[in-house]
Length: 161
Image 1 (cartoon, rainbow, N blue to C red):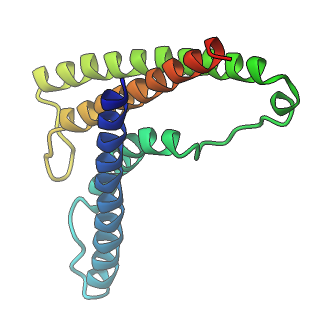
Image 2 (cartoon, one colour):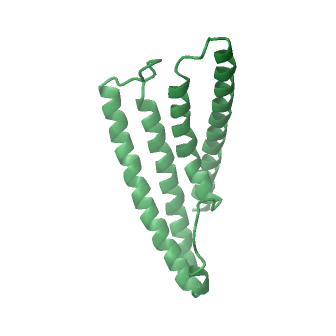
């Protein structure tokens, strides 16, 4: 199980680096577009590309953020509970989150397939949309795996005194 967890965490880290690269692309593209607008030559499709890169940033950083406990959590009441209760709440939270993000991943795959079959593209620069829906599915699926790994860890901690 340790090998599987390490693989999932390494994969999440790599996806986070892709998300970071997408942030850099957005910054460079936006800067170039603003400068070129001064010369009356804006970059066509900048708005679309920024939107697509936003899906990459958000979906590819979900799993790493979860590993780092970077999501907002209000746990001042839970901290006052006994350790076993804290672990149980954490396990239930991980279970519910993995179910939710598993469903989102599944539905995103179905949506990506639908977009591919209908040949849906962006309006300005005609980029196919389905790869970005598939990226959302991959990011949510990876988060689902991270939450399942954390669920297993929480269950082990509950059962071992």
